[in-house]
Length: 190
Image 1 (cartoon, one colour):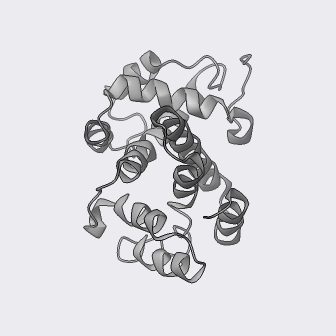
Image 2: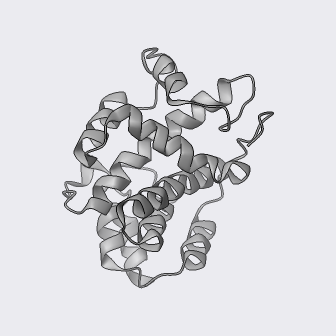
């Protein structure tokens, strides 16, 4: 079993971009939230979320990420179920998502970016007063956060078995719990 401190140290070793670190912390928070909700292991799920993009800066191409990163994870004795989840979070690897944890990681990845983007354009710049309805309003505007693949987000939630807007609400609640670490406290009160 891997400790969170070990996973975070790995992230810090390979990732210098703080917004990428915040993305991984967001996915970790969402994964822990779902693990607790579903009676799964929050450490394993959270660490899979924390590590999923750890190699993006050193392997910024689809040919390498996350496949080349998996080799590093194996060298560091990361449990194979977490490595499989990391490999399956990217459609281009062809690694099928079989476990609940793998489906959760896929569902929590893209949506955290959209949630962050919506929080940042609000007057408060905060997660504390953000609701799923605000994300839904921005969802229809394809020019907004154009990098957030809405088809993938919707498909991932369906594959995970959670209704899309319920999922968005869950992810917001999960991210709210670590708003200070995400620099998304803004001017709203918790």
